Length: 79
Image (cartoon, rainbow, N blue to C red; front, side):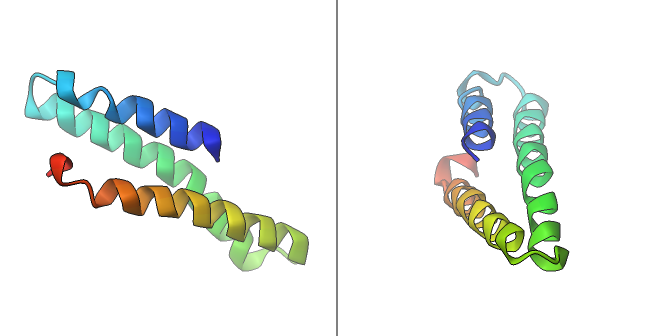
């Protein structure tokens, strides 16, 4: 969880130094990829794993990273 969020924060910190729209796009795309690499498997485990303990861990993990993603998506300076 923390590693994913820290990686996204580091990427988003690069935005002010982006010189072109393509550079900004690439940074945002990289951040999106990092989030998806975490959230997609967590959602899969949450939905299909037969062991409740795994499902609950995936639910917790998914919730924390999804909360961060929603916070980032609401930042006006990104738009």
